Amino acid sequence: MDISSIQLAKTYEGKYTALSGINLEISMNGIYSIIGKNGAGKTTLVRILSTQLLPTSGSATLNGYDIITQPYKVREQIAAVPQEARPAPWLTPIQTVSSYLMWRGYTHTEARSIAKEALRSMDLAEVENVKNRKLSGGQKRKLMVATVIASEASVIFLDEPTTGLDYISRKELWGILDKLKRDRLIILTTHYLEEAEKLGDLICILDHGKIMDNGTISDLRKRIKHPYVLKVYSSTTNLKIEDGSVSRVSPDEYFVYGNQKTIYELIPTLIETKTRFTVEEVSLGNIFEKLVGGEDEY
Amino acid sequence: MSIRRNVASQIYASVLVNSIYAMLNYPVVLISTLLAPLSMLAVVTFASHGRLLAVAAEGALIMNMVMSGTSLQGDLSHLKNDMRVQDMVVSSPTSAGVYITGMALSELVYSLPTISLLIILNALFVKSTIIGWVFVFLDMSTIFVFSISLGFLLSTFSSDIIQSWAFSGILSPILTTLPPVYYPISYIPFPYRYLTYLSPTTYSAEIAQSATGFINLGTNGFIESWLILVAVTLVITYLALKRSRWREV
View 1 (cartoon, rainbow over the protein chains, first blue to last red):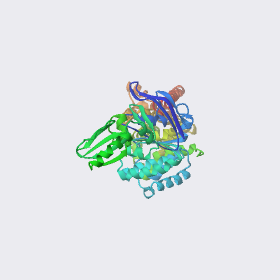
View 2: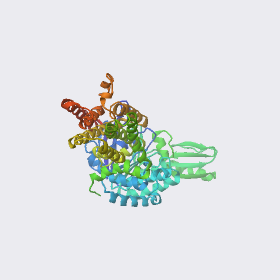
View 3: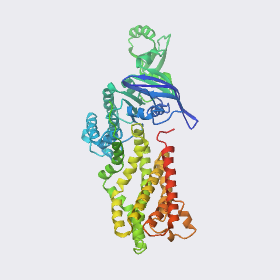
View 4: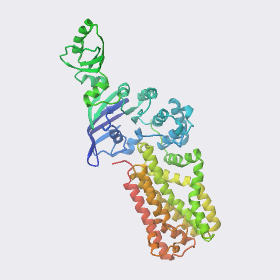
């Protein structure tokens, strides 16, 4: 499965630039996570690649087909769940999934049988004949994902599929996506950095319509100046740091960001003073903050 | 994995979602679809002491076709803006033409109980020749295509439910209240009669009423009405196919 784009850009009403100069090269099965603050351009990028929206300039291909000039070829390969998609309240889960499959061209009999299996795999078999309006928020989101994973699409776009879900429901969905990614490419946008880090085989950080960085979590760590964090549980900050930065997170805890050498040089002092500490690689959240300069939910 | 895509299934999916499943899961909608055109038919029949029952029954058939477009506009907007179903369909192998064909048929299926009842009333009270009925059928088909195309065109431009309601509010008086569908146009005094000619439904009503002998348009008037109705339908259908936003810009 592959997606590539050259200088993809989108400007709304000639004024607001949502995307500028996006160059992508994705060639894999797995999850490609796109993270960014609100308004970073995540949804615009997904809508363009899933042929819902035309770009202002640039080009992109999906499995070799041009998304602008060959949308029908592209649409045979993809399935998408938009950000605010929700199941029609007057339908039941089995009706929701099977009608989507019929829109993809399956016969009614095929669609019913595949839909049943998809609902079973998503633990929704018990509610397959309950009206969608009676489902919980988590069940509704799972149903939307079931709708597209039931299809034969090789590339699936999920725009913030876990937004609003509690932690347990989110983890359930992560398990499903993790299994699903083996033979498909999933383009996943999310606000949850933990989710992007856990699920994303490749992670793309977007900000103001531009790609700030793009790669595996290890690649992202390698490219930042201070890839390690020393968490020190102490109220006094008396370490001498030559190459790194210090950030106090609470009266009894501060973090030192640095490279491997800097952190190792500090450890003997901490042991001598019997100060409690841990050393970790920086999280995606730390990288995100450094690249984008703002906070997000994680 | 490649599958043999079945266009009939793609059309049927729209019919299922927008009408059959709605009727199966909420049978009360059957009553509401029956009441809308029949209530106006009852009012006109009672007010005319039964004299206009036949023409009103025929008019109700036309009105049912016209209302399909108004309903389609609302249904499409709802599926597009509130549930994002249309975006999911855009990113699937279903084309705009197939989707709209299915949704248009779903409106017909939705009103099948009403149409059945009206056909019975027409068979009982409207006396016409076979040729007359053929013209009525062609007339109903044309106004149906017109209203569906207009509904689709407007729905693609509506971005939320308020806009959709506004479109319905504009369509309703122009297409259903103003035209003399339930009674002959001669009942409307001048100069107001000219106003009714702003609506394509008026030409449709004239054609049906003339084909079944309620009014006499004359050959020229009959042809003129057909020409105007077909021309307006072609223009709106062309605009719906070419100008509507399946993929947003």
